Image 1: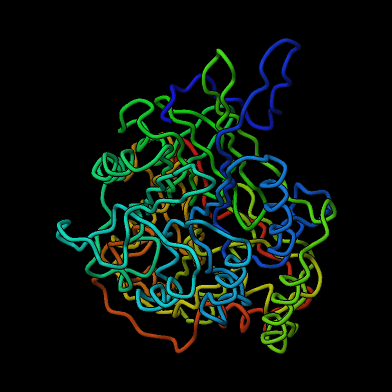
Image 2: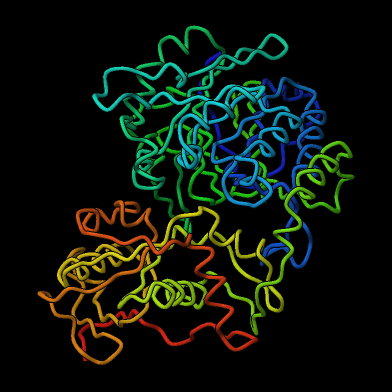
Length: 509
């Protein structure tokens, strides 16, 4: 049933209405997709939702069930990975709460995301055993690239009402730098297109449709899309797979590359991708895509899942409901540098008694509301429980770390104890022009400074490999506790630092 692709209907476009005298369209398969749940079992309001609650697994189940019913066609349910890590309700159970919820939603397959490794391979394998659906990844091998771990199945075959769908998994190649490196020691995450091609003949021979389920994603800004999953699609033969369901970047994406539709459904239960393969009379096959927003007020949440979430929530309430501070204003993650990141970097530096603090932006997972904030609120911001360490580094290494943080389109870290002037128009690695410490002195390349960071970063995570060789001291605290301790010593209500520390300019003053 590998029909030629005729059309990709744009985001939010409704299905066509048959004209009189023409055979009605026939939907061959519906793919229902979510991505990057990150333990978001309860509904939440988003800056764009105008106060309306979105998602939560109890509403998601009803929404997904409704999508399957309304189609009246074979349908499958896929998740693009990073299911468990990110909230107290999920983390305190090492992901069990998320797996139980997704079992109830009826997933048919999930990609293995980088954050699936955050508690070790052994914990991942235990959660895979708990799941009623397979986790798949075709590009995980041992470090030599020659052998596949027995727990990393490359693809699975889903059968629904006589329709066979091969689902080939992928895991982001950035995994060694986006989870604790020690947790993926001995593993390699190879080229996605090569891995898909390796499995494609068997998968295509067994199935009517081939879907790539990838924890690798894209970003679409102002109509232009870029990202690693698009490079994967370009590396495949045109239309050699029927669909790529993407994840990892937490964005809503609906595009086509090399004749292959690519769809990504945001994160945290905030979106559901709906892809219909339709036989459209003489026009051949069409692929129709929409992205739904699962507003809670549009459904009656599933009572069994509501009870499941309440059960796990009660187990953590005594900890997560504890007030830890008061914020004068909501702290958003907006722009290249923001108050929440500066506040966290200040906490690192002050609690560790270091010269400089640095927090990678990937470690800042959500925003904070104005008013009273609880342990649970802060846990959602920094859920990884990384150790706070103090690393002794030469000034040149610190400068190299700043160059790395400023190598992209926007800063990838926040700092405390210094200011940086840089030129983003210059080549990566040669952008930093001037660095001044808090006391007004210039950074001395030959001097030694203490740098407060999460051990994940000190181990080379997020690409900070230059820090790994240098001696460190454990502060005895995890990063979350450092933030809480710092809030306790500040005047309430807390104002996050407002003055920028990273100055994009043509030249330094």
